[in-house]
Image (spheres, rainbow, N blue to C red):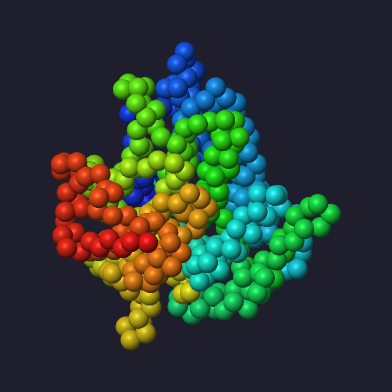
Amino acid sequence: MSVWYTNGMKKWLAVLCAVLLAVTLAGCEKEIKQDEEFEYYTNGGIVFGVFDIDVWLLGSKGAAAYQEMLVELESINTDTNLNIDTPLRYLNEEAAVGEAVEVGVHAYTLMQLSIQYHEKTGGAFNIAMQTFSEMWRVDSASTQYFYRNVGLEDFALPSFQEVAAALQALQDAAAPDAPFGVEAFQQNDKYYFKKLGQGVKIDFGAIAKGYAVEVCMDIALAHGITSAYIGIANHNKIYGQFHNPDTREKIDFLCAVTHPRTMGIRGNPFYKANLFTVPLRGEVSIIASGDYERFYYYEMQEEEFLPVCHIINPFTGMPIGISFDNVLNTYVYDADAVISAVIFDPSANTAEAFSTAATVYSFEDAKSLLIENRIKSAVMTENHIAFIGISEADLYMPDSLMYSMFISYESNVEFIPL
């Protein structure tokens, strides 16, 4: 069977929560000039080996804050990256069941956060999906391999029985205080993980970037920064208002959300239609998850393709939107599945965890989850959009063809107050 991969890097990101500034986000440094009230320190580059970082910091200590961010980001990378030699990779690939593996403070903190969000989302947020990502070949190593065109190859999807057996093994390893089958504990001021079952593998990819953004913003605020934008692989956070150097005004940041079917190979790679734009101020994280990142089409039979994405449903062990039809004895795709969830929340950790969790559930259950937890958000399927905690008056909709995708939903748009 043939496959067609796409990568989740910035160039293919379908729901682009880009903060629209009055000047272009640049990758080069800009020193603070005379009028500090309207002069941002800007910088950018690559972190975690593959992800873009962009920062805009207003304050005399912007350069010092950015350098401190880079140091902390490298520490997070050392604690969590599965593509280099790290303790977490050793835990997954080599450690014996019951073996205590020393990990860094960031890994330990992420484990505690993950347990909290696992409970808050009813189990939909689950970091123990690495085994299933590898089975379906949507883990970061597999998709990077194919994206670099080292060699496409034919392969068979995992059988329903294989998926079910792996899911049962994970459930057997889980414990009340270790829902991911990994025990985390402290001893003599050190941090340790211990696998509780064979085949258990964890991956902090569903929360690490949001966590990194949160850490960076904490550093910025500790340096007295009064207005900031921090973006890592389109995991964004703003603070304050934007101080426009051209108009000398303090204005709201604008977050433009692009429709997930107008970028990448699921749409026209040369066309990008904004679905809606939201003005933001204060402390707000903007993070989206969906089926448009790191996915491929698997040819089930001639001219019939199954879209396989990187987010795994922890209740089924299958990529979101996919289920197994026992009558047809084959995998099928649900055309009414959630394709994207965009979260607006003060905490980047909360935004990332709930954006992933919402895509796991059905449209109605995703709405219930977000309403119950009072999460400001937009969740969508191919044919419906629900704005939660966002009114129609909150949307910035200029008269432009760029917003034609919003009009295409016609009456299938609902606004739900919190």
